[in-house]
Amino acid sequence: MLYREAGQFKTTYGADQAIFPIPQDRWVVYAVIALAFVAVPSVANEYWLQAILIPALVFTLAAIGLNLLTGYCGQLSLGTGGFMACGAYATYKLSTAFPEMNILIVFLLSGIPAAAVGCLFGIPSLRIKGFYLAVATLAAQFFLVWLFNRVEWFYNYNPSGTITAPPRTMGGFMVTGPEATAEARYLVALGFVALFALLAKNLMRGRVGRAWMAIRDMDIAAEIIGIRPLTTKLAAFAVSSYVCGVAGALYFAIYLGSVETAAFDISVSFLVLFMVIIGGLGSILGSILGAFFITVVPILLTNVPEALGLPIGVALAKQLENIVFGAMIVFFLIVEPHGLARLWQIAKEKLRRWPFPY
Amino acid sequence: MSEAYADAAVSAGAPQAPARVFTETLLSVDDISLSFGGVKAISNVSFDIKQGEIRAIIGPNGAGKTSMLNVINGFYHPQQGRITYRGKVRKKMRPNEAAKTGIARTFQNVALFKGMSTLDNIMTGRLLKMKRNFFWQALYWGPAKAEELQHREYVEHIIDFLEIQSIRRTPVGRLPYGLQKRVELARALAMEPHLLLLDEPMAGMNVEEKEDMSRFILDVNDEFGTTIALIEHDIGVVMDLSDRVVVLDYGRKLADGTPDEVSRDQKVIDAYLGVPHE
Image 1 (spheres, rainbow over the protein chains, first blue to last red):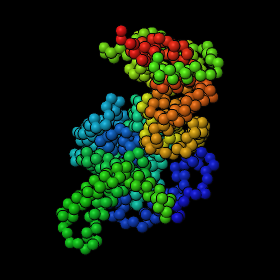
Image 2: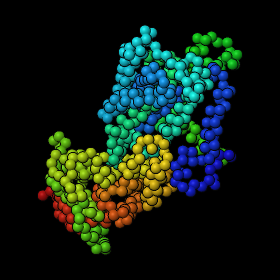
Image 3: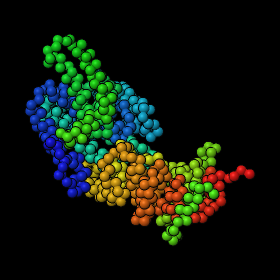
Image 4: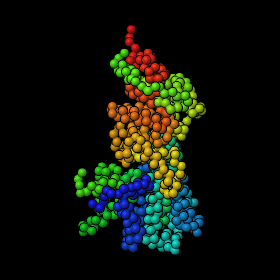
């Protein structure tokens, strides 16, 4: 009943092209953003922030990055972990080489090497498509992890081979390093996600996004309307890897604090890909939903038996979690292959007509 | 003369406006030959397209019509011959470069972007006209937004012209075939082309849809002044719409002239209906 567009007339194309053309949607989004920035840090405890919200936000950013490439431009990539590693190691090198530099600028700059590497590994996309391209990007994944493991310069010749986020402040607050509070780190992660989600959405609803989707949907027709496949695909790889690189920087400096290359192995690439697929290919909202779904559901599954008072062992609970989680993914892909974002869209359609059945 | 042909002759002979006269040549192909391995798709074909006319390319299946469009459009590179476009001999070019010179086209099998709405599909036709760079686009503010809205306005003009207002927000994958063809025409028109290539714009349509499409083709030619080259199998439509017709068969040019001349040409009749065995 509350969700009605009747009587809302748009009189300009600007209003029609808005991200949320329906005021109800807009208010909900403003409310969620306000809650996330103000209410959550004051309410949530350390466990919630550190174990659930921060990783979910970091993976949201990575999922947005991959969705730009796979969902919008149609180029399947399994190199996400590698591109994230680029961002993480770039952050480490930059912040240790220039201790005075603002950490936010370090994060933003860290995406650039990742973008360059992404571009390089995107070159095969001009010749090969689909699964074969995925295999080519797999090369990026393995090569990059090997490189960061093997070349000691990347971890400043540290004998343990791990990189540790140096303590850095921003506006008087410690945001990285062991002394940074979970709240501060949460707010940084949230800020980045909000900023990049907005920029990504803007890119995708304009000329750039349409060119990428045209390449995805039919590259021959894209070419006859004047799109250059070469530059378009490489741009998609660059932008996607940039966002993944920034996500990697946050994964290292904001979430984990200290990492080895093992933190960026192939399982991370798959995890992000699952998020994109479950959330919805070609949807920014889908990236957010998918990342939260995949990070939150395992935690729920671990805690549900406990909350119900069922006495099951830790090992069994872990196995159950895997089974249920796997089953849910399969169920999802069968019931709604277009992901959570599509489900949400259907729910909204139904809501518009409720309580009428037609 | 068989009945099918007699029909075509009748429609060609129907009362018509006096023939339009065109003087300026927009595009001419000279002595084009194209082969794939041992298969000769086009051999030594020459014809021209005048500014402002509707030019039909007809011929039986496999005559090389679509190959000819692909050559004009930069998909195929002929082994021999040259193309003069707007007074200049054209270098070997890719389809996206041809698009920049103002050549748009539609495909025999609809080639729309299935995952996008009608509006977005047509907006892609404006890509070459949009100049704001990446960073402005990401901000979607100020000049970038103004540019976007200005192109939206142009696209709305085309949507009105082709009467597809009601399907603006529909993903094109869900549209019926006839409308998909119309959206494809809209996308081509959004490019503001000098030369519009239509590959079987009426294939698979029923009579009403064909009539609609014919009307749109005439209107486009009339209102936008766009030069149109079209391939079509429906001889009745071709004879009614086009100013001049070129007939291909087995990659060779059989005839070239007004619909009247072509329909009386014995070689054309033979190609379409076969030659009686002695």
